[in-house]
Amino acid sequence: MADKVKITQVGSTIGRKFDQQDTLKALGLNKMNRSKVVEDTPSIRGMIRKVQHLLLIEPVK
Image (cartoon, rainbow, N blue to C red; front, side, top):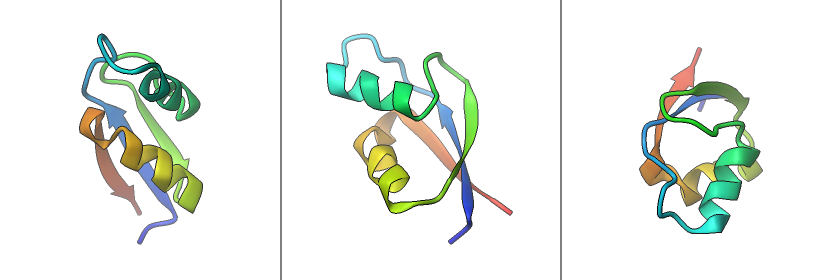
């Protein structure tokens, strides 16, 4: 497993539950096709798992 992962928002937050919208904001994503490189920690993995249907996840080397 990589030390960092690149996450890209590919799904819209329109019509999603507020906790999913808040999770995306906490990950630093708030608009479609924005990317962010984040540390690969258990807490981040939990947030990613919650909104995985809205994200594209890629390991960073």
